[in-house]
Image (spheres, protein in one colour):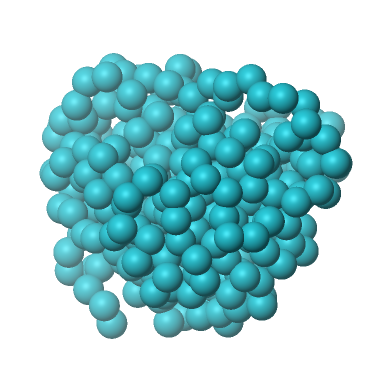
Length: 332
Ligand SMILES: [Zn+2]
Ligand SMILES: [Zn+2]
């Protein structure tokens, strides 16, 4: 499914099969989960995609072919491919364990063709082994919703009372992880979104309600997954002194001005950018121990536009996943 230009629908196209260059593997894609970032790319809010482009950065696939000098994976291995597709390894960020901020990073489904396709090529160093016990559909949302959510959760510190703003794919995973860690979860949704509120309560949140109002008690930290700048002052209002507000998304509408009083008391506002491979390894080791159970809605590959629209409307409970290879994606 090809994107020719921002703000146009994807279209089904035949393109040459990629080849595995030195250090790369050719992947036969089983499934690819949707991410809100995909919408930001299609909608032109992220302004520098390669074009034409195959989007998609939560790929579960098997290795079909290995390029020269590939050592970590072999033909037939099942792997997952995340957003971080390549780093230079030499910049000040890479050298200090912060490759998520690499000055020359390349991203899957943005700078590099991604997973809304039958085949993809990726750098062997930037794919993960999928833990046992997760079938393809279940595993795909772990690769960004789970991973970025996990990095955000770590950034929230050891907060006991955790607020999650926007109850989509990330929040539904992170609620499970946070409960496993003994935290208390408060889910903040759009006003009157009872379906999401019920879903949050089912997954272990102890309270769910309107995002623009403070919760039943002060929070120690909040993570904002929805791309809505107005949630930043709302979340600051809801956190106790010393609390952190983490903005997990790659794009957000403008943040309205707010009185300094909301930030006073050593409250912190910070963003989360991308991921490191270490985040991936840590989270994929943790997910089976929780164990995380993802709720997924499958769509066929050629329904990608409809799937994106469903996500844009907020009508997906859990994660939407494109099924590229029906045979391969069957639960074992
Ligand atoms: Zn770098
Ligand atoms: Zn993503």
